[in-house]
Image 1: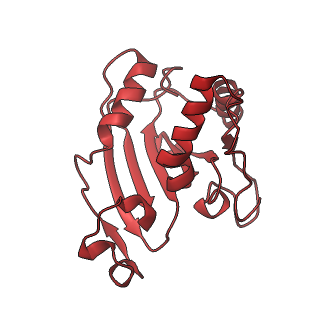
Image 2: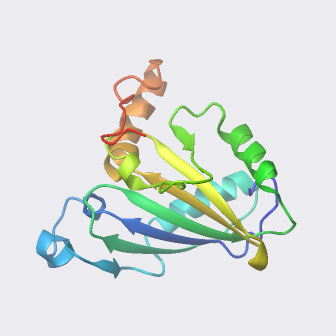
Image 3: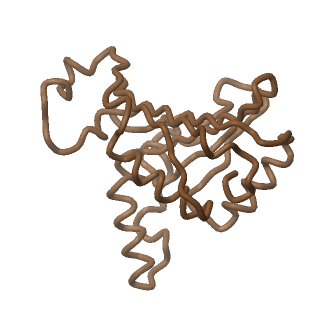
Length: 190
């Protein structure tokens, strides 16, 4: 959306729900199961350490400096991240236009799946259907009343996080098939 210049790049909001495996290797009282069970706990709701990485990549795509507001939440799951990203449109855009843009952008990305069903319980990306895989599911919905685009993504913060990225990068650097060693189906297949 940034490359196509259809969104307001001054107001990008990232709202992330993160499982306990994203808490890192160290422990504090808040990372223990008894303290994570049954919670939706905001932490570092402003100036989170991963905001810089998001801004770096979006700025590169835009060719100019992009600022992002990110607020993560610890949730009662072990693996997985669900990001609900809010952006505001500069111009009207149709669902078909968005499908074309997403397909064009991700057509050669083996680990990106576009998810948006018309009916059923699982219409949008859901961490349950990526856990155990290197996939990142991406979907969207349009809020015409508020000129807003809601972009959703779900990934396994272990596989698609550092571990999967390390293997994928090693494969590319060594000239192996990019999917070697990480082309696994999710634990709950779609």
